[in-house]
Length: 166
Image 1 (cartoon, one colour):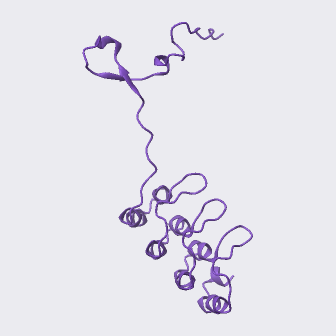
Image 2: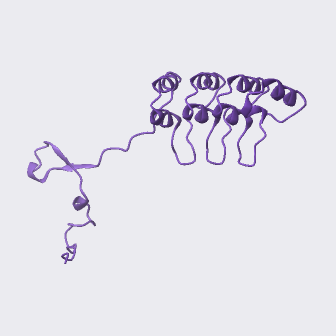
Image 3: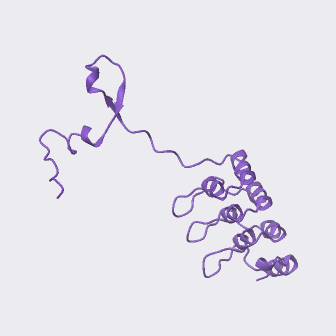
């Protein structure tokens, strides 16, 4: 509770008395994640000073950096990047930090992440190209492959046409 309320002195007292800085809640969230989600930069600094792991993720793959990004906490984003947060991390669904930032529309955070080396998920490769049958082997332009170009796909030699719709 002291973490979400931003009570730095209570957090530091608990840490000094031996509280595990990387302990998780029942939901698998660390104090650093909670501080980031609530915009508590001073608490986050204290947790980092006591060795909080910036790369820990909850069961959904969400990290403290992702929380700071989602909630638009640009100062916390900078703090976490400087502390070694993974700017190219992805959550359990495969969504990367930079993608999350772009969804929020926060250009400042997108810029901070890109400056730190964040990359977007690799794009799907273009469809396989095959020679245009009209080209007659002249080495000219190529046409994108279609489902009908596959040996076993619809439209392949010997393939049955689908039944007419009624």
